Image 1 (cartoon, rainbow, N blue to C red):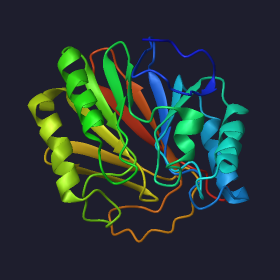
Image 2: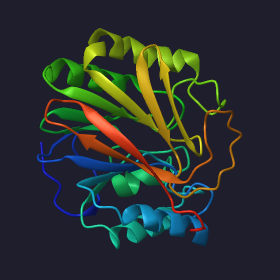
Image 3: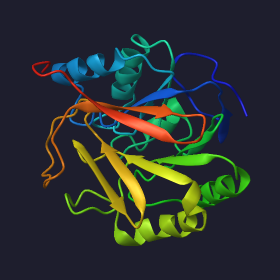
Length: 249
């Protein structure tokens, strides 16, 4: 287990990274998947001004899967933050992501929580990644788990989600440890939505800069935003939706 060596985006080369004294994380999704336009940059710039111990980006950092686009996103963020940024892969950077950012499935082992990034950018899970999740749940008996993915579980507000059979594969791993799985955070459907599936609370945060192109049914919202997540010593969490200021784009 290693500590991050630098601020900004981390190139992850270990399945587990141990961090301490993390109390506030700012999460966002889909900052660049409709091109990293001037409007996208204005949204993301505002999000990155927040104070946090860590930033999480839940995929779709790029538009056409080019190394140059992903470099631009990394450089933009690295110039604006003084804390580590951890990410997972989205469907718009399937080949470029591992070259620049390394693993897209891995665990951040914190004092009272495990933040487990689980790649499903193709719409499916690798068996090896599900095995890693299972082993982590069995290993860290006394910690609460936060699962972070790009594509969300099935919902009734959009068809842009996992297929039921893929959700059931994940659920088969989670269910024996249901009491430890505190929350699922996802992106992919541009906007904001919260719901519950099979007893698991889900937050979709995909308002990090991309245009609001997806058809979403209420109560989902087309909203540029981030999520501030506060991690408490008793293993609980609280969260706050931070909308991007009106008129910023």
